[in-house]
Every structure is written in structure tokens, then in C-alpha cells.
Length: 246
Image 1 (spheres, rainbow, N blue to C red):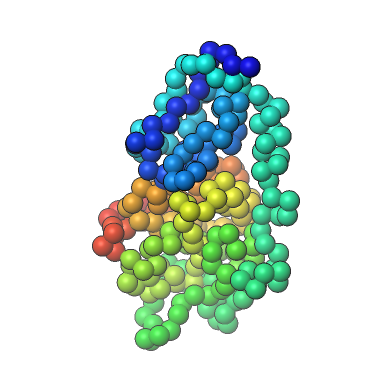
Image 2 (image 1 turned 180 degrees about the vertical axis):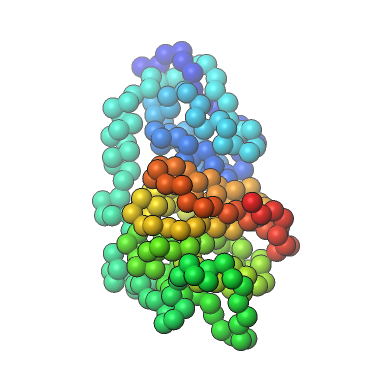
């Protein structure tokens, strides 16, 4: 049944698919589909506009029009079905790509995480495997008391001295919020902050709009977990130079 009510409207011309609006919609009404934010169903949108402040392109607004009534029960059922049947973290040993490895004395530790290091040519500073956000298990031992470095994928090739200047002995998680499931990112980071005593988190991302969702997700995950972790955000230009550090 359709009624006249407030509901979100998306300007497809302005929307660049960055995904920053997705974590702010607790009803799951918004998803990135074919590179644009779209309403999954009118009945999932409560029309309150919690997502409005998250859009850097000003592509969202609340309008009043004929729409399906907001259905709280349908939202709960949808969110329940959307949850993965298995735990969000991939059990160690099930998938070869997700098998946990810690590499000798380079295992992450906060003691030297923030100190630049000099490496011999060809030497890696990576202390563990896996590194992809979707593959790192929430219970991975290298996350215990870790200084966490969250990387947007592109930073690894844009910044020439990534290992020397940023890895230190940090635990690394990297991914792309434009192409991956943002809600799954949010759930995973929330659980990590809730269950692991993360000592510091550094987010390294590019200046491009699609990257800007990554720090939003990390900050929201900390808030969801009720944790106040020392936080640093670093933005790189597309030429690989540091543009800002806060």
C-alpha cells in the first residue's frame, strides 16, 4: 500500500558510488548497485535521513511523495536474511587464502609500530597473512593488542615507501570500499574493536571519493563497539604524495 510520506531520493547524476551513505542506514535500505547508491526497497526506508550528512556529493535528499509504507518487520526480516549464515570471519584453515601465518620476529607489535625502518632491497616488513579485510579472521592472533593499519588497496602502489614508512610492526588490513561489501566491513571492524584490545588505528586512503568511505567505516565501527582508540587518518594524492595527516 502506498501513502504520501517522507522518503530518501538519490540524484544519480551526482552520486559517484563512494558508499559513505551505506553504513549510516541501519535499515539496510541503501546499497551500491551498478556503481550507484540505490534504494533496495521503499518499505525499508524510514525517511528520517540519517544518511544525508554522509554524502560528499550532496546526492541525497528527503522528499515527500507516494511510496510504500515503512515496514519495520520487513526490515528486521531483510536484515536477518542478509546476515551470512557462517560467521563473518573466515575460519582459519578453511580457505587457503585465509590461513593465518605470522612471519617470525616481524610479527606485529606496538613497540616499534610507529618507527620508520630501513629495509634491505627486496625485504618485506609484512608480519602476517592474510591482509585483505574480507579474509582476516576476527580472531586472528596478530590482532591482539595490535597497532592496526587499515589501507585502501590503491595506496600500496601509490606510495613508494609503504613498508618503510607505514608498516613498522603494524597489523595490516586492506580493501576497497567501492567494490566490496561495506556492511560486512562495518560488521567485521566493529567485532574487532569489540573483542581485541587495539592500541591504535591508522587509516591510509586516497583522495578519490570512493576511498573516503574507509575512514567513515572505521570510525563508525569504533563507535558501535563503544571503544575510543587513538586514531590517525592519512590521505594520499593520486600522485602518491601525502596531502593531509590528522
